Image 1 (cartoon, rainbow, N blue to C red):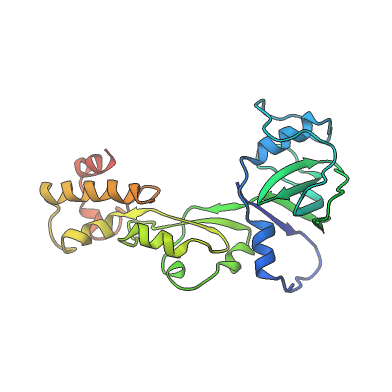
Image 2 (cartoon, helix red, strand yellow; image 1 turned 45 degrees about the horizontal axis):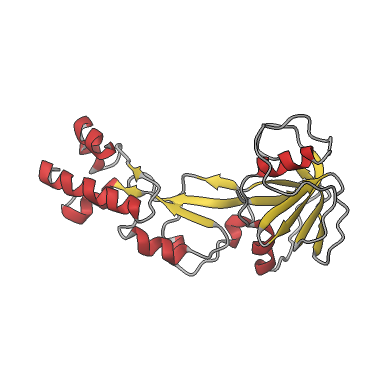
Amino acid sequence: MNIFFAQISNEHEKQTHIDKSLLKKIMVFTALSAIIALTVSVAAGNTFIKSVPAGPLPLPLTNSVSDYDYYLQGGIIVDGGGMQPYVGDIAFKNGKIVAVGDNLSPRGNGIILDASGYYVTPGFIDIHTHADEYWEKENDGAPILMQGVTTQIVGNCGTSVADISAYLQAADGRAINVGTLIGLKALRQMFISDGAALTPAVLKKICAQTAAAIDAGAFGLSVGLEYYPQNKTTTEQMQQLAE
């Protein structure tokens, strides 16, 4: 799970210059789950959370932390699990959450960031975008990250790139995570023109190509049945594609 933190203020908006490499290191990281981390905090004796889901505790139980890279202090944590926001600290090591709690008393040599007045949340996942071409260029995605989005899904409405593997490789290493669907329109255009009929033989090829695209990393099939030529797809053909 990714985490993003942003300041909420009633004052006029102010432009802030942030080092992009530091922004990426701080805001984008992989963790098993924010919920698991919060469970650890409660088990350690922190009482600022009223309830947490039951489950295993894979992280060390502690009220202090001495080994960390970054430490967010005093942020308003919104964990995404339906609990009320609360003030707490989060410590990170090697891109992962290592501790969450109320005043963890950091004792290491890492970077401490004052998150007072900031909301610390799981990164937002934008599941419907048409930024396909954006990631084919040398864009780092920092403007998207600054909106709190840490994952974007492209390839919607049946329109996508054809070569999923090459696309994902090109989009790797940006400021946010990028995923794509394989589009029905793109699949059709691999084998027939827009005006041509979708015959059983062609449909069989499209089904095989859909499976290959998913194996290459596509999250699934996208369809825009209100758009030409996808609007010529029958119910039976859609059933075969879904299988």
